Length: 422
Ligand code: NIG
Ligand code: FE
Image (tube, rainbow, N blue to C red; front, side):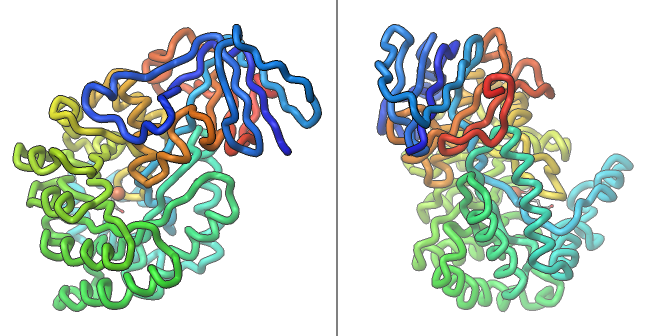
């Protein structure tokens, strides 16, 4: 049995009552903490924790790793419920084109964008894709990410989409963090289907979804519901086919235009609606009373210089908010959740407590992992962050661009050692 004991923590953060699975509206401002605390993990799971005045009488010190977290905060690891971590090549040329004045849509219309990434991905073998994505994920774990959702969507044909999802499966097996897979074949209409888009949606609905479900290659299904990409009706068809095969929806909606995707997704029980940079009152109303989680991607707004999603309006409407990086070569070449936390506070105007909840418990919920991760609760995975000595929790998003993490623990084992584990 492997055991880990953290002692003298300045505070354990995110000690929500057991069973708390999703925080909405004003509840997102509540981030329970225990000051001057200890935590015991056994076999990768949180066993018990409390204030140092309730120090557990440890009698068996064999196989017990002890970490002294004096002056350091202990948080649940970051969960990143929206990424495109598997891709073949960066697109910094498009970045320079945007500095010169072209928009994301203009670059896509010239054959750049997602279709550019698809050409490169189709040409790359599975092992190389795997090695590159693995290195990216290792970097993200170092930055505190303990769970990640990864989408396909740069294959855009049967074989290449399956290739991407096989890479995701191998990542899941090779690395200790939790990995969820999403089929995003409806990311763009591929060149060869340009004049018969319905046939491409048929291929997704009749070919890919049943095959992927049968082979256990995906947990979720996604579609880029957007002007010039996929219509609301096409996304609805894909969500319904996914649901019929046990794949919940997690969709790209309202990034550039509001075309009714949010209502259609919420009506079909989507787990999350992601982006929401453009949000109309009808979209907000459509989310009321549903279980669909708005998932915001502020690094994408930062990089593309597009509006930020109206996070405060969502909270004022009593809705939950989750955060994710959107790591991808076109709109967000960063998988750093610490930066997302800062942008959430600076640009979305979330309070630090709201942002931490959005990047942990609600982010876990946005990939169906809230019973496993996202808070410090007995029985959950001991996937935790230990900070450097910092004056307060608000200091983490405040001193943006700096690395405040010391140790990253996944399932009770350090994957990044720092001073606390030296
Ligand atoms: O989430 N918006 C659609 N998909 C990605 C961008 C993909 C790309 O440009 O390669 C996103 O921002
Ligand atoms: Fe995305």
